[in-house]
Image (cartoon, rainbow, N blue to C red; front, side):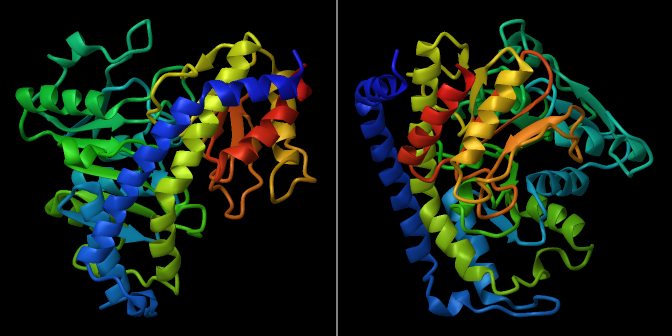
Length: 407
């Protein structure tokens, strides 16, 4: 079948899905506007301070705006978080103490957390080095939460439960808001004192509710992914219960400083504006993921999620079954990127990852993956993980080239 014809057929079939996504974007944008209005955001909030960052009005107001949008008591939104992994690590180190146990309930965590936990590496100050125990509740054979196992998994010493919303580099369904609500309910029935922590990377604005609005005690993510709207240059966020957020902030800065420190270095306007743009960008990325899934399923490739399934994050996985096709796919995406289109992705090692990766990411902010990118580990079954997309029409253009590249 002609690639152009296949894409046109996909676009027609997805019109009802696209319309529903636009409705959801509108609901999320209303929520953002309400938070801006309630906190009286003005041009004076775009100013910044230097040095220690004391009394940064723009930063402190942005924390309140973020907390309201996420349905949480408090937030710390800081450019000093170097990544989502850093924000997550600060939350874990802030809450956990020697002798505590952390339980991951959605199978193995994302690759970049393995060394922070102590599953790989040594003598780096991992949680394991500080005598913090780790267990994980493996997924079922069908890649789902082990609901029966979860009912008896939480112990007295289980201080924190890690709930990874996104699939990461695995072939499982990402968690829905309803899944997360049910996990929290089951955990709290066993031990009300256990902290339910959600890794929310790639999940912001996918639904009209966030995990902290359905009971999560603490949550973290990256500003150069969904909530940055592609224009925030660095940073991450932690939101949740006020006491827990402050404990995490003390790991980012120092005890006694906590959330009162951290200069925003003239980044306030970008963080406000990125947050305003975020719901629209996420909506376009979701449209693109439906398009990718439809086209590749028609070509006979396994896709996750399926074309007409509701989205739970902005990641679309395609099982390509050979390293050659994975590399060719990423090359085509790179050639149709707005930045560095002339570069050729080459499989290589990357800090924090066990396997070599091939990555296509011609983005305006290094590592953001938000202008449409694709990557995957060089291991069977050679899955391409696609993320982002500021407008679905760009995804369609890149997709046409990617299909031709692997044929």
